[in-house]
Length: 505
Image (cartoon, rainbow, N blue to C red; front, side, top):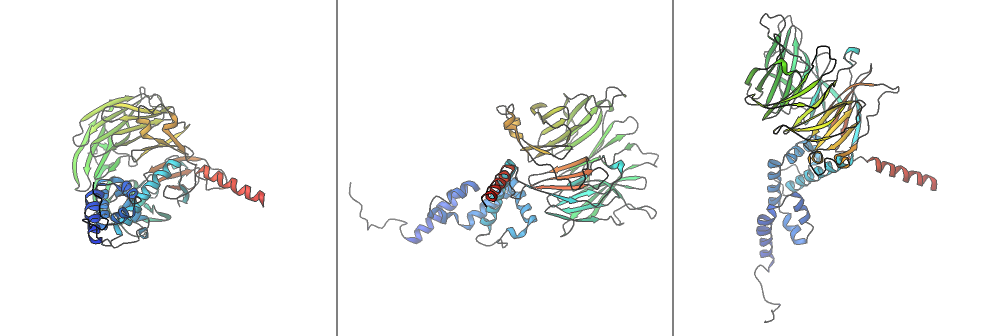
């Protein structure tokens, strides 16, 4: 074989042709198919690859694809902008480095969040709520809701309180002033708001005006300090003085909002059967109205919905003298037609309260004297269960279809791996299912005060608790998993190092 002359000029050996080859072939034809993690690893292979991956068009393609098709990326981009717009160092979208910087910020923060949840790394902060409810209401959880930016709750005096999730120090109030869209007569008082449901565009509230209970739909307009609420529609659902009043609604427990769908549940006065209505809050169109579920099924204790299913949770007492629910039953119905898809009785008997949450086709249930069970809403089967270890289970939530949160009466939150609980190979191993226990909220009062009730909301970024203490004003406790706090083990190691240093000194 002839030796190759080192002076021979090969195709693409000159600098312009090399740059063209790198940008055209590697960047657009090969690296364009990589995901974020693979692209970041490919940067470290060699200088040539690093230069190729620095192409702005490549990152623009990756950024647009991930934000559109990966839900975690879309949510993270919105939340990072809400937390601090300065996190994006290149606000001009036509900049060469903009999409790479934003993609790296989103991808790295998602990875950090996963690590913080796995290791229990978070910051916990108490915020005072300037409300002192009466002793009668102290046992009832404070009703509140939240979206990606705001935490909103109904006050005992009927107003709506809002806080910025990412700067919750200040509390603002939204009064409902009379206008053409709010049915207030000259002699009526302002609406007393008793429950709310919140998403990014709409706030739905149930209020009382004189003898009427009214569902209000407010459009949420973003502002710096608090959202601007403009009433766009309303509907009277009950009037106690009307002779044709057929239904009764619990104003603190009758609405659920999921996306554009609003579910309204009440009781028929004649036979106490459950009545269900569904409407689209965007188009203000009713999908169906006052569909009935016979009273022999039981008493409606909770309900939820998504784009495909309506989930109704009933409790039934076998005798009128029973102080506890003897049986619990789940009904899965089609959200478009209300046709019954599945119905099954839960293996829970003689329980005061059975907690319930629904997300993406899985129903999670649990009570003080029964384990946490995960039900497949499509098949009607129990696909996993585990002992929660809480003496007084107060709340139950699923987060991002990956975690299950349980909270006891003292505000102690435990994290459980939902994937491991559903996997037949790991669901019988408690060490795989249980992740860790988060520290309880620090009591804000010098003297010991017992927590009478609590309410919990959670998503991929925060756990928010509203704690009602005995005869004291409630407290807002926010666990933020963006913060890079230290784990319990790291705290112990840090204190050990400090003690060693003191001894040496």
